[in-house]
Each structure stands twice: as structure tokens, then as C-alpha cells.
Image (cartoon, rainbow, N blue to C red):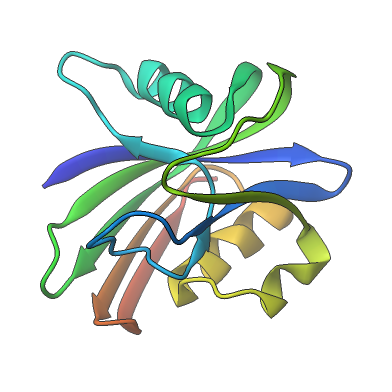
Length: 153
């Protein structure tokens, strides 16, 4: 099972999103997701999210929060534990990314872009300012076949 991070950077009621369209053999190909990626040896979740955001966007996070943990299980792909963050303060300039195209997407327009079905669940939790949560998503191909959610009050 791999460990990774995912970060939704907020500004002006928008998230910085990436259309994954540049990497070969990408489970996220054609989907919009936040920046993030796999842990390197010895990294903490915080070190990983900061490094991945910088590598993929050119931005340095100044304020971010761990919002939840997602277990992603998909037939044909390695299972993954994802540490989900939001960030509201950063500095730097957005650069190009070799994994996809970056774009600010209004939060109220997220339903009109190509997202994983499970991402709609946690994006709703983020919009509702939900307490910390654990979400398990099971997929067969692109189809969400099972989900379970625990919200820690």
C-alpha cells in the first residue's frame, strides 16, 4: 500500500486543481484533482504535502491543515492511503507541471468537471467544514462500488 498526500489550495472561493493529462499509465488520467503525491523515504505527511505542492505548482505553503484520511482501493491499482489537506496561505508563483494542467476552479463549479465520484464526497465534507474524517473508497475501474465514512466529532 502506498502513502500519499493531496492538497486543495483555496483562494477567492476556488481551488487550485490539476487536470491529469501528461503522465503515462496514470490512474488519475483525465480527472481533475488537487496537487499531491507519494511519500519519499523518511518523510512525514507534512513534509510530503509541502514538497509535492512545491514540485507540482511552484507554491510554498504557509498555512495548511490536515482534514482527513482517505483509503483508496481500486481493482488493478495499488491501494493507497491519502492524507488530505487544505491550504489557505502560500507564496510563490504558479509554474507549469509535468503531470497535468493547473487551473483555479470555482468551488461551485466543481460538479461540472471530471472528478472521481469519491472526490465529490470529500469535497462536500470540506465545503461543510466537517471535522476530521476517515473515508474509504473502493473502485472497480472508474466506478465507485463501495464507500464508508467516519467523522470524528
